Length: 483
Image (cartoon, rainbow, N blue to C red; front, top):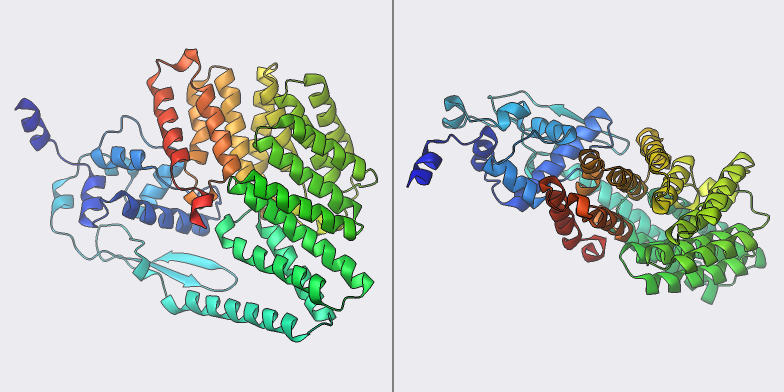
C-alpha cells in the first residue's frame, strides 16, 4: 500500500510526459524517431559519429521509466536534446505543471533536399515543445521519390543498353561497368549492405552474362574478368557480413578464377586477402594466416595497399594463434611496405579495394590486443586507431572498422581493469543501427562480452548491465535478417 502511494505522488519525468503525448510509448516507434533525430543532427553539424545512433530497448525502458541514476552518454544527450528541444537534465527530471498541461501545436523540422546535399533548419516554433521528426513532416515528399525514380530509370537504361548490344560489347557498356564497380567499391565500407546488395548482384550477373554469351575481344575479356573478380570479391565480403562463410568462400574462389583470367596479380593477391579475412572471422586463424601468405606470394611484385593489407592480415591471424614473433614481424613488414607504397589500379577504385592508414592501425591494434602481453601498448595502439577513424576523411571511413577499433579499445581497457573506460569505448558500437550489425561487428562485441565475464567483474553491476546489452545486441535483427 505504501509502495502504491509513493508511485502516485511521484511526478513523471518530462521525457515520459513528452513520449506519452506523442504516442511514442512503443519501443520501435521511439527508436524510429530517435534514429531520425540522430541522422538530422549528424547532417546539420557535420558529425558522422552521431549518424546511425540508436537506442536499445532496455535503455529506452530506463529512460521512459525514469530509472536512470546517471546522465546518458554525451552523444545520446545531444540526440535527446535535438529530438525534444529541452536540456537533458530537464528531460530526465520531474515534469513541471506547465509541461503536463494540454499540449499546444508541435512544430516540425523543415528539411530541404537536393541531390548534392541536405540541410536541416528548424521551422518557426509554435509552442514550448520540441520539433518532431514524424515521417510525414519531412519537406517535399515527392523529392525523394523523384530521385529514386530517376535512379531506377538510369539503371533500367543500363540493362537495356547492355542487352541491346547483342553479342558485341561496345566501350559504353565497359565504361558503365567500370563506373558501377567503382561506385560500389567506394560505398561498401560506408553504407549498410542492404542498400548495395541488389546492385552488386546485378553487376556481377551482367559481367557473367557478357562473358558467357557476348562476342568479346581479348582486351575486353581481361577487363570484364577483372570487373567480375571485383564484384565477386565484394559479394564474398557480403556473404561474410551476413554470417555465411561457406558462400563467402565460394564467391571468393570465383573471384580468384576471374582474377587469374584477367592476369591481374594485385587482384589475385586481394582475393587471397579476402579469403584470409573470411577465415579469421570464422574462427580459423591458421587458415587465415595461410591465405594471407598465399596472397603475399602471388603478389610478390604488388606494391599497392593490398600488400599492406596482407601483412596486417597475417599479424592478426598469428596474434590470435598466440604466435607473437610472427605477429610482430608481420606488423613491422606492413609498416615497411607503407613506406615503400606505390598505389596501383585497385587503389584508384578506393573503398573496399584499398587499405588506408586508419585501417592498418585498427588491424595492428587488434593484433596487439590478442597477444595480451603488452597492456599499455595495446591501449596506445587502440587509442591511435580510434583517433584515426574519428579524423579520417569520408572516403577512408568505414563503420565496421571503426566499430572494430572501438571494441579493441574496450578490450584493452578491460585487460587493464578499467571497467568504466571499457563501457565508454564499446557504447558507440552498441548504438549501431540494425543494418550495420554485420558478422564482424557481432563477433567483436561478443569478445567484449567474454572479457567482461572474467572473475574480476562477475560481481559488478556495470559489467553485468553491459553483458546484458551485448546479449540483446547480438540477439536482435542483423544484416543477415534485413535482406
